[in-house]
Length: 128
Image (cartoon, rainbow, N blue to C red; front, side):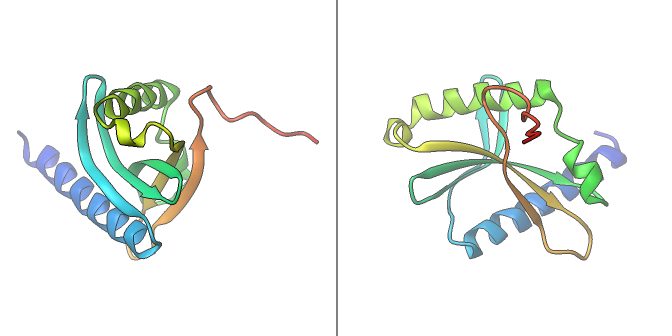
């Protein structure tokens, strides 16, 4: 692995550590980190009340670049991975699933975007 790739991997792990701590401090129970599934990896799986939050973590320098970092194809991979994860954890099957994004920027508190996307596809624009 190249030095550049190793640094990116290290930066991603630090961002995930900070995101998990932030969620914990907000009252979430962390159920899994870097959960491997047949379709990829789920960064953080957390629960708060009756909600199962699947949290994608992005280490970026700006909020805007973090918001743009999760493609539709990546969203579909996360949704498939969630189905696989829940298939292994039947105790979670009755919880509401929410797909969140956590943006971790240097020297800033993490930004938690709740319900960043849904399993049905890209967020609809509300013109009302």
